[in-house]
Amino acid sequence: GQQLNQSPQSMFIQEGEDVSMNCTSSSIFNTWLWYKQDPGEGPVLLIALYKAGELTSNGRLTAQFGITRKDSFLNISASIPSDVGIYFCAGQLKEYGNKLVFGAGTILRVKS
Amino acid sequence: KAGVTQTPRYLIKTRGQQVTLSCSPISGHRSVSWYQQTPGQGLQFLFEYFSETQRNKGNFPGRFSGRQFSNSRSEMNVSTLELGDSALYLCASSLGAVTGELFFGEGSRLTVL
Image 1 (cartoon, helix red, strand yellow):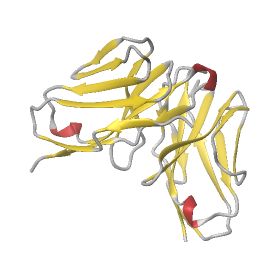
Image 2: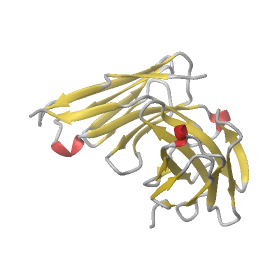
Image 3: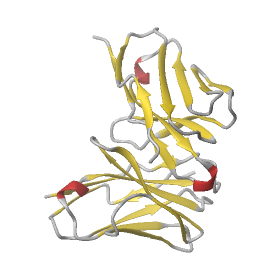
């Protein structure tokens, strides 16, 4: 079945730092999405990308849909403490409706 | 606008029992999906319903079933529970049929003893 490889698995951030994470797949997707999950909550949609090559921003977040349709990255600029959480990439194929394939997640922690 | 509501939030069952989880989607959303989240397997798609019809199903055994009612509310059922069914079960609703833009509930955490 389809699998997404998300990296890094975890990272430590210091306030003000820029953060980068990415997802790759062996197969193409029509849509790439990025979600964030806080403890005790369900994932929340951050950014949705619909076209190959598309670059989209949402505040301090920027994400891109890879040209090959097999990858995507998410950047967080000037991180703040509330950025801590688990970030998931997800891919969707239109013929499968709202069925999403999720990456394993990137855990963002605060450097002490 | 109320979000996706899942009940119960927490439950404990024993092996062999069955469980029913409920989900009320955001008003106006006709698509409801269910996902299982575990530390080992991550987020895995269970099934999606749209206008009371199951549109897609993930790779789970037949013990996992679901349904959607005319008011878009959905239930999922797991019969003959196994220890490995312990997980967070997440329901998500969507306005469109193919957007992928899902709004998740807080989940129902099932523990099987």
